Image (tube, rainbow, N blue to C red; front, side, top):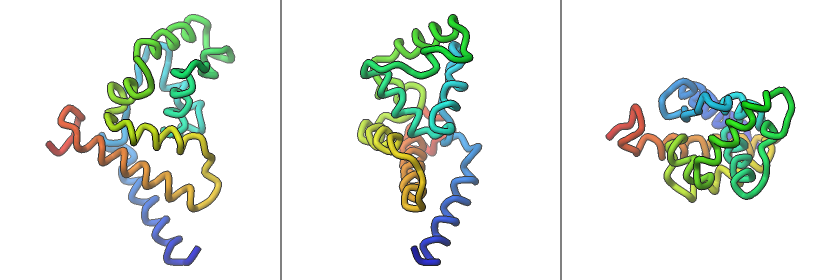
Length: 147
């Protein structure tokens, strides 16, 4: 990778940092069942890994935090019930993550399967974040949207 490409990645990371606490970078996480804590456990709080894990759940898998560990039995049941109130990962993303584009959800799922170990994956992840922010900013029902 050239020095120019490295600088470009560095600049993009700085741009991402500026959006860290912007409205386009948040999702609604129900308090019931402590879904935010569950999200933080999946893939180091990576959004794409969280969506991938949810897709596994909606396709018959089980969320690791719903199986045991430190989460109380009642919270696991509530978390499972909360997630089961959505039809699938697309319904979840539309209602809580402000992403209506199924193609984008599929890109998140595919990205969430892969670790970020090289600079090319960092760039892919940044590109995906920009797509998510763009999708969210186009929605009139999204807080802080331009419309």
